[in-house]
Amino acid sequence: MARSNRPRGRKAQQPADDDEAVDLNHLLAGWRRSEVRRDGLWHVQPVPAKQAVKTYLCPGCTQGILPGTAHIVTWRGDGVLGDDADLANRRHWHTHCWKIK
Image (tube, rainbow, N blue to C red; front, side, top):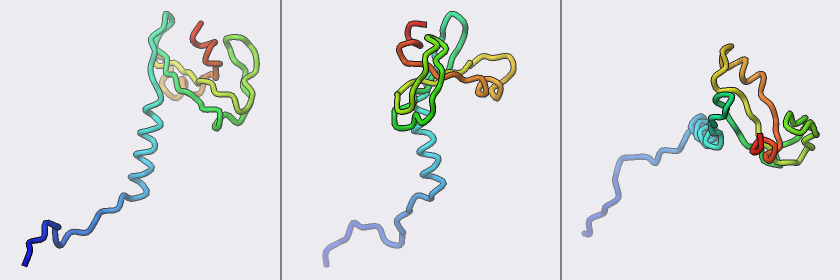
């Protein structure tokens, strides 16, 4: 009889829903990056056009960012009031406006 190389007695492990959520959050966090500018450390996260569902005011050009427009969100990475305050003060920028800031 031929020998089988298949492991016996083990069940294939299916990833749990929690594991999938953690993997997705890790993947999404991978898009976020940190940039050092003259005024300090900033976290920058792109927002794809599909996820842009509201109108925002760009602080760089004071023009509106319309729904369906890809843009970026920025917040301080070195604020003295803590991470919660920095996240509450995040701003949506046109990608071009952020680059020329």
